[in-house]
Length: 299
Image (cartoon, rainbow, N blue to C red):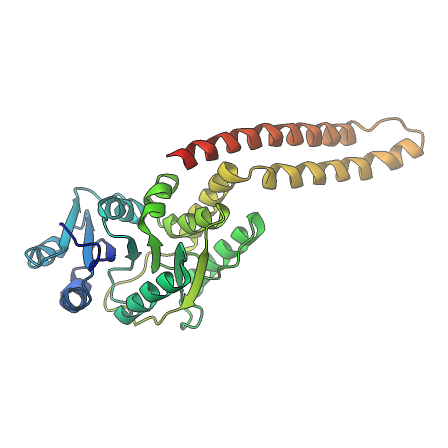
């Protein structure tokens, strides 16, 4: 899948798992859109057991279209990673294979990332109609935890439509999970590493067929991944507040007992010692994190 960098600047990457009904409607429009705008297209068939593979191979002869096949379902994040590794253009954009994303927004995000010289643009669904309460709770939990753990100025961090500079995307996908948490973690990795991440509203179409897999379980998995990425980049943000809280609790517990002349409280002493231990562990973790980030920047 060769390309001319002066003409082909953008590759569309789409993970696909059991989206046959959507692909039959969505794919012809997408192929035409890519031809008209000189975009390249990579679709990852992530172990689909429906007719997705047959539908995709109907279009295999179209220029600048590549299909990647996973023999088994590896996960949303794993599918996107497989696609990103194969991208050769300067920019790449990820969208979902269910037809919910508006194709004109691809052109919009492509133009913005060039004009702003940004490293990532997130397509925000902030004005879209609310989903089920179950999904809304999952997304709410992700945003709350992310804001607590690190500075965050992006509303829709788990949006499936994002455009990246390909070089940076390839650099940081190794830090991201194979699950639905990929969308959140790649965004947080860019933000934490001080890259320019912007957000712009996009339009969302009604899903053509099927149901979304986003849920509160996804939120739980993402929360665990958030802690992992935080421990990689900024562990003191976890250890230092914990140490301070334990120290304050120990002092509030122990000082009144000392004033009353009843000696040292075992519980208060344990809290203070735990505070010191968390602080020291935080310093060690911070040194390890600095070393890992240095290795990452050299790759």
